[in-house]
Image (cartoon, rainbow, N blue to C red; front, side, top):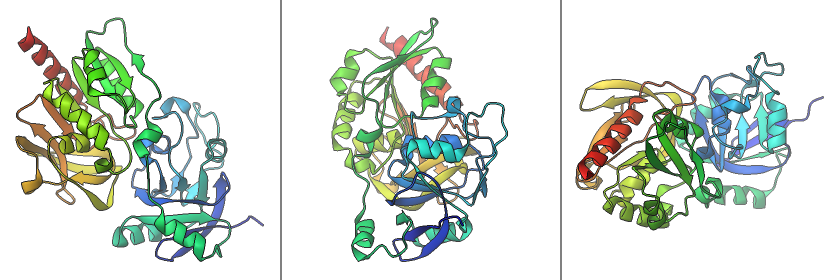
Length: 364
């Protein structure tokens, strides 16, 4: 008889399921993603640091594990929760099954629970802490520890350890990619457009970045509460004063807003999935986007001076993009690099190329 594994929510609700992946008791912040595909990109997205991820799509793992599709070096999430996982994947690119991958990565898995009921609870009550355990009678001390859990040092835990360069022989522009937990496809999209990309750790100073003489600065996605990154925000203020073109994605979007005097807020249950509709306000055009975030930039009177909302979320009207009118900078909350998800907004990378070229021409 297969051993049971339990999910205990902060509000006391208990779900009984079955184990896969690594064993052991684990605590984290429980969130859900509505993506129907791209589970490998989800598993390896550094933005999920400290979180337990629930997949709303019922079958996961059917095309196996493909390292070439990873968006990070290894999973950063705390646990992975699915309705059903495919024991025998079918894909010529697959190298192993999901259970084997999670076990080798040390990620606790839970399956055969009612994920639909679980997600409805999260939607109604908001993101909360949770625990996965083999013993449902864990005791009050462990439950209190779970309730007190908070994600700390998120960016520092997922950023690269040293600078890394990617380029082709035909590269004509230099981009500094400030890594707060960058997905790999951000650098790939820039390289495809003729950029030599140097990815630098989150602890890099503005002075060190400017010493590289980049044509542009890319602010990456990443995990955690953006307002906690006070050191990065202060360095970013100095970068903005340099008048170097800047493009921010997800956490980079939030940090840029904070550096310009804006505010951020935590969402009830966030936006995670590959089917999030956003409106480009100037063109009155809707795009379906890939997203993974639990915070948003506050608009209205809290919006930074000389800033204009460029995209908004059609589900809850939160800010999805900002254009800055006094510096060569813009940012978006969603993921134009997708992986997985729709590629409809890749043109934002082309806009960054145009911004860098125009800035270089004006300097000349």
